[in-house]
Image (cartoon, rainbow over all chains, first blue to last red; front, side):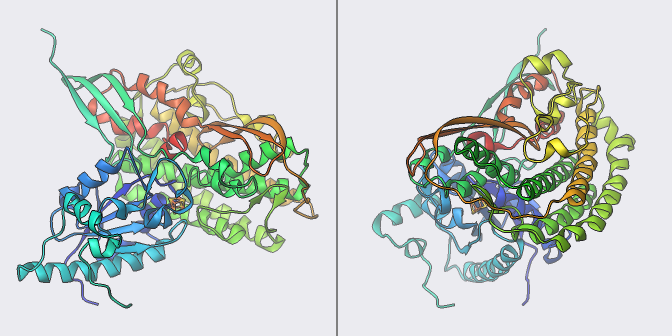
Length: 173
Length: 360
Ligand code: SF4
């Protein structure tokens, strides 16, 4: 696989139990070392290409997740890390959990696991890199622009299918 | 003329923290005069799940209160239920629990050392410490099958046994980790650049630490010898160890206490392996719990209380957890007063904040 740039990633803890967060951090440390792909963990949304979101979304942090997503420059990809971020996981029935990350922002790659293993995460990131490349190709041709979180919320009202709302074509793996 | 006051928001998304916490820093020039924490970004309402998951399943939910001290949370809940139901786990179960508890403490403290190194901008030290943390995780994985969430606890004992040959394989690993941490210790406790960031930063006196109700290494770094392990739950009554304290009361003292506790944990693990009894790991349970119990255990971050109220049904009525970070936040707000803005990240990290425990 060819990597055309060094993507930087941003990590935000939605309402995770921390298990997935430390695994995200562990993925950047010597054993797993995503830095060998030129990936750096940055703290600034405006420098980031990949958004790793762990944990479900709750009423207090939904605006934070939206804001971080909107602050990131195009093209960008979002990874939902851990089963909580995919659909709420074990906390799905909790009164304060609205659902997975895709209840507020469009998600490109879902990485399941409780806690998500760093290997799975790296696999997810590699998939995300491909999507990132596709998106930037399309952007160069002027065919693509990411949805803002507000637009995503609008399109979610029209359909139940979150992939459709995010404007993704259904693909068979 | 008094300097103009301004408010600097810190968090919820901040590079130094893996977790979201928001603090409003009221500053005058470079000095913080007041720190107002606001929480709630990770609140899930987990305690309420007791009405939806039966008391056996709740063990796994309890473990997911926090992914760093997950074993302890599972233990606290199981301990409370076992007391209600009058179950005495077997000796081997107790020893393995103690061993896993101490492995978790090692991984949590090493993790903290890394985050601390990151907070004062020593990136390579962060990577170095986390290299040794992976070795601890390898041991945990060999013993339980999970890296951070273990799901090995069960009411009445353990879900699976840890074979003796795996346990004895831990001994050389422990030596390697200790050696590695001793090398890192030099940087933390004697590197002049690091000392400049730690010595005298965030001083908390012994009186204040007691008055504000601090917990864990944060309390012990202010010279108060209090450690709930001394109460002798699980197999701690058979173990030989002392409470580690420091009289510094500053960030340096907190670093010192945690580093020494890593060696202490390694020692306790060695004792566990040496004295490990050979017997079953599970006593069957009958019926449903009826009654209430409150237990307090020593998590890596300090004392955590678990309260369970059950009424003889499949679902327990109420579970309540009080975690050490919650107890340490008032003291954090106090140490932040009068510090430099540049020291805020270090001070926040020195209490070893675990927000997901605090807000559940
Ligand atoms: S998926 Fe599991 S480990 Fe990850 S945040 Fe959720 S409960 Fe924690």
